[in-house]
Image (cartoon, rainbow, N blue to C red; front, side):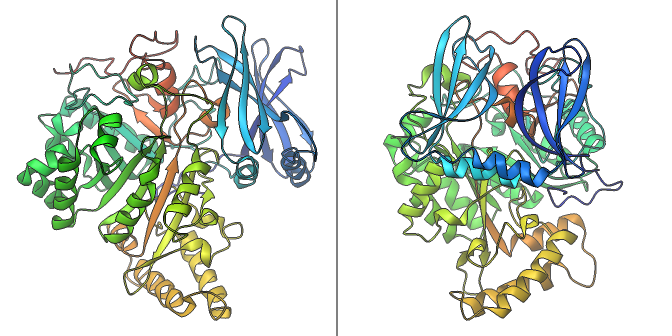
Length: 566
């Protein structure tokens, strides 16, 4: 299943299997223990193991994949009357102190999911992973085959995560490339996931090579995001945005704190004229919240940025880093803001990850944190069910524990209705894509046609059924006209049909799960040509996974590892 709206020539091939989970096992040849990839292939379940002695080996563990999945999900049912932890599965995580890879027992405790770990050097630890065990277990039912890039950047040799780049064992191509074009920033955020040094800006020629490499690996990209640091501090940021604005890339997104946007109208107008999209960090609405998360009162700066984005009608994604006890009471408020503006395409909630600078300096309790289900509950409660808990589903593009989302159909009166109110996503899983809006692919066209028939048949049973039916027919007609559209034209049309709310939980040293890393689709392209899965890069390559002084892993490589301008 292709995971974005990209229409590549030649097409990116699907993986020959569906990656399902990790499981401890031993090599069938030499009995060396290891962690196997559990994959579904041709209706059977196979363990793939990169043995340290024998190399890559595999063996069949079940000839009935459907029965295996049912049995796996049944493990998540806690026996009635059980007191204590219920073991669900195992995976590989990290010691929160020394960052060594360690085995983790995934347990269910009082309806929540925890990792229990025991490092030979540092001793035992545990961390909350999900606030809803039922959601966590059922998410595995959404596993789907990944898609290969046209070209891998590295060859697997030692096993995950040491071969990142991406290697030919990685289970998903690059859905969203994020290029960090500078390590300069005009803020010192207490929760920053990187460790900025304010020393380097990327050369345009270097950035152009990165974009060339992405196109070589992917064919086309639905989006590319420029980040930092604060990318608007780069003296040549408009030149970089122009370089990224090429036919093979559907959207160019500038991820920013918005300070320059609100102060520099000419700059904002230039973004509008270039057709640039903006990802605006907006973690709350009060001085207290901004100070705790971003280090200073930013209310006026955020309001100024919001005003210019609305005035110029710049397509915008809102990015809200959700933090327990700090801004979780304002989750509903940002949803209401998001629903109020037609230029807001998507809303991205990121439960805070304690890595980078913030990982060492932001006071936190790994057993008392927001996770994806917790944020969804706040959305439901604080919007009075306007967007509800059951409107969200795991995204099968990445690992299903990484992202949850809902699409909202725009009705003729300007209001929006979550797709889950009239679509069975378990039946129409092809509609669940890693995209800010419904992508205009042939699979989506077929799915929308089927949904229209289903809604027509029961429109009297669905609240606002007639309005939903008219909006669906409009979407189908406009997204798939008789005259073919270019990729960029098709994206612009699709943006007028729906919105999306994403919840993406980046990992840190407490909840790191090697299983999730294997199918990461948000990647950081590097100067040396490697394309690094985001959470692996943050954990092992930045050198700041536990705060500014954290040593880099032995196999790690720093950002800006080749010459750049300062």
